[in-house]
Length: 88
Image 1 (cartoon, rainbow, N blue to C red):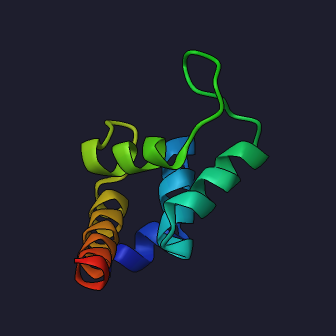
Image 2: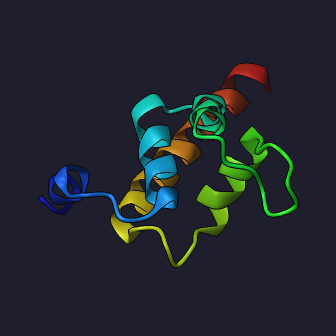
């Protein structure tokens, strides 16, 4: 039930939007494209990369809803296992 409530509530932080986009697409590259489409740049002024989205998921942030982060982590770990099985 908590997952449904989180997904239907207003999204307060941009980090939550990034995580939601990752959950929706299951792709760090597509989440990065979303960030780029919003014109957001990193703290040092460069364009964000898919590794930035990966780091956000792995390291988390105080600004990200805990339920969203947990969902994204589950998807991320599943994607990682799929890639390892396919290429190793």
